Amino acid sequence: MLFEVRIYRNLARWVFRRPDVRGESIEPFGYAQLITPVLSLWIVASAVETVVVHFLLPWEGIRLAADVLGLWGLVWMLGFLGGMRVYPHLLTPSALRVRHGGSIDLVVPWDVVERVTVTKSELPSSMRTLHETETERGTALQVGVGGETNVHAVLRRPTRVRTPRGERDIVAVSFFTDDPRALVARAKEHVAAHAAIS
Image 1 (cartoon, rainbow, N blue to C red):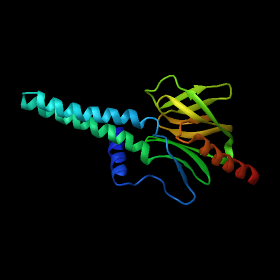
Image 2 (cartoon, helix red, strand yellow; image 1 turned 90 degrees about the horizontal axis):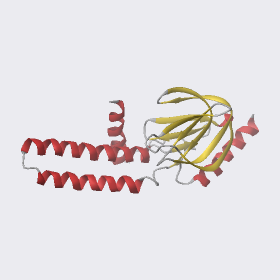
Image 3 (cartoon, one colour; image 1 turned 180 degrees about the vertical axis):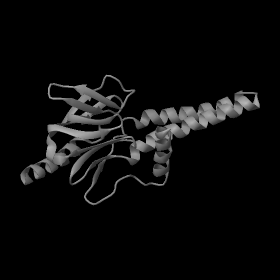
Image 4 (spheres, rainbow, N blue to C red; image 1 turned 45 degrees about the vertical axis):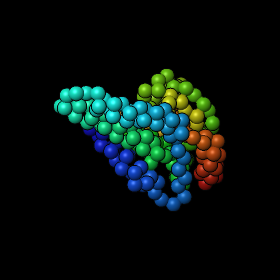
């Protein structure tokens, strides 16, 4: 039910052009470019299917049920895409925020980030967004888009972050962004600035 509510909230934010980017000196980085063409095809195909099924079904009750299901599917897909648009990754003065829709928001303070690199990786499944991997140093999280990540951040020490599955102590996080080189360049500046302070 919570996921369903988030889908409608995402769609409303997208329709009213209200991205979740608040505060000064915050830089957003999108991650929907890879998956938008695929989702757009699904949305168009679903819309066409809903209309075709409406005219093919001769029974009023079944036609109404099919219309409701078809429209629900359309709204769901639009809300999912909208969530990726209105909740970008954020580089704030104090932290890197790795996000996906309205459900994932990993806050990683700059003072625990050791390095950030452009590193492309494929995940074992594109069906799940959040993956966990156990390494020699500890738990690494991957937030994928289309089964891929292209930015990798290594942490100086295990750091607790809040995930949809509860709190985790992590030593690294990988994620996907549309412009990995630009994000990494800016992230390195934040890391260097905080290292100089400490």
